[in-house]
Image 1 (cartoon, one colour):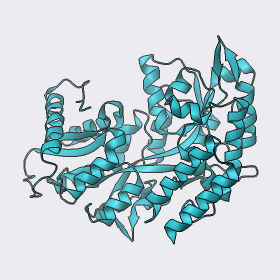
Image 2 (cartoon, rainbow, N blue to C red; image 1 turned 120 degrees about the vertical axis):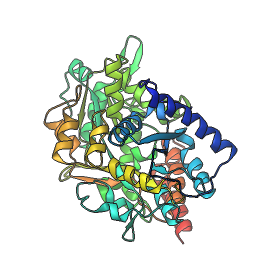
Image 3 (cartoon, rainbow, N blue to C red; image 1 turned 60 degrees about the vertical axis):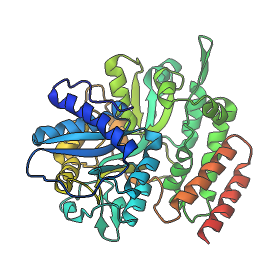
Image 4 (cartoon, rainbow, N blue to C red; image 1 turned 135 degrees about the vertical axis):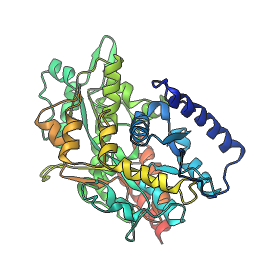
Length: 428
């Protein structure tokens, strides 16, 4: 769980590994610190809370770049399992933990921490950040308590070889009806195994956030009727056998990477974070998939490409031991050098200048062409889930009703009505 940066075998790498272990121990035994600021005039060990360090290469890339630019600083990752991250960080901050930098996994948790006064104000670092995608999501009544360094959004991955073998044209400006029709054409039996035309992961956003983004729907106070068409399309794909059914995906704990990289599915709507995963897998020889990307399918008559996404950010803990160094790290991560560091490994930075976009698009192994360019530059990217005081409760309701619809325990109409009734009680 607490994995040091193995590829770098130098002294600093060994120190980081040891510090990760020590930090883990301190979190278990102490849970919080004194809150007294430390001397930052000499060498500094900066602690940064992250998740799944060994499988999230952007953190190592960012830390290496910051340390190279600031030789007096050593990064001490506080590694937490991804599923436990929100709960763990909530406990840490409530207990007065002094970890210097906290990674904001989503804007919902960010709003909660900022609202509780647990993050330091970094509004003065926002100057000249016009090219920073996702920055608006961190606006708390004119103040900012985190800066995004990464901006993900959803697009369509596809297996070029499967399209070629089926004699089907690659995805190009598809509507959802065309997407469903294509998925059915690509579905087949191969060597005794089922090959699905597409794979929809079990997250509710696959249906709901897509619907909300492309219908300008409100997932907090709306009537949710705008979900209906997307649900009918998804359920029809399940019923026809062109997509793995939700119940099986859930019970088998299907992995979207495995489904796509082993050729079990020909298409995959997914976030841009997966690009880094495919590039890494191809480089290691773990997959032979010949992949391409295209914009997310759109509603008929749509103008431009609309998708959804969410930024990821770094924030300075209000109780940080090394506040000035933490601020320096946050500013670095959202700037040009931080963006270059993660773009080089296939992670889409929040800073989206022409220079950074070209660097990202020119990575070895990246697809190219007009549809790739269009997919990487959507006309509109809506926030995956609006932020409000009701977000957490509404998110739980929408997830529960989503699962009931997808396994067939409720009709689309009944599920949407239940969402409406239950959310109304929360808001009222």
